[in-house]
Image (cartoon, rainbow, N blue to C red; front, side):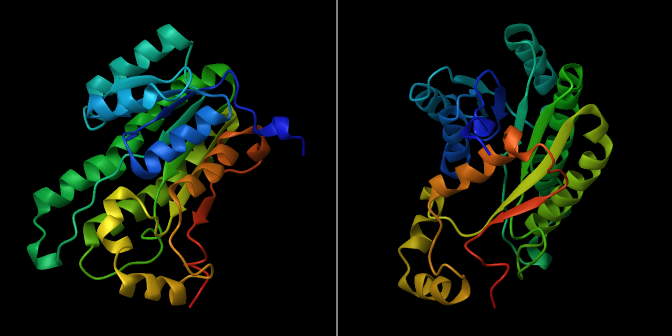
Length: 251
C-alpha cells in the first residue's frame, strides 16, 4: 500500500486530554502525518505549549464532562474548519482504591470522564462526520479493558465499558462511512509513571511479563493512532488494537 494511504493532510482531528504523556504523543503523530490537530484539555498552558510545536495545531481548553461546553466547541469547529474528520477520545482519569474504600460518587465521577464523555463527544462528532460521508473515531481504552487487577474496579469497569461502546458505535455508524476503533495501551514510560519507571523491580517484572521485555516509549503509541485514523484502515472497525509489547499475549 502506498505511503499516501497514511497521509492525513486536510483532515481535522480533535484529541482530548492532549496536555501530556501518551495523549500528546498521539496528537504529535497525527500532526506529523499532516492533520490539523485541535488539542483539548482542562489546562490551557500545556495545550498552548504543545500547539506552538505543531504546525497548524490549535489549543482548545475544554472540560469534556461539560456536555454544553462540548456542544459549543463542536459548533466552533464546524464554523471554523467545516467539521471534524477524526476524534481521539484520549482523556482519562484513574482512582485506584480497594472496593470498600471507593464510594459511589467517586465511581460516578470517573465514569463521567472515561465513558460518558466519550459517548457524547462521539455522538457530536458523528453528526459532523456523517455530513462528509466519512470519519474516524478512536477510543483510547487500556489493557484494563479485558483484564483486571485488585483495587482498580472503577477504572476497569470504565475501560471495559469504553471497549463495548467502541463495538456498539462501530455497528451503528458504519453505514455512514464512520469507523470506530480503540487503542489499548499497556505499560508506557510517561512522566506520570516516572516513579514506576525508576523502580528496578518493576523493570524486571516487565522484562518477564511482556514479550518485548520493556516499557513502551510514548512515541510508540502514535503509529497505531495514525493507522486507525488513515485510509489504510478503511476496512477496520469495531477493533481493539493492543499496543502493549505483548502483555496480553504473554504469560
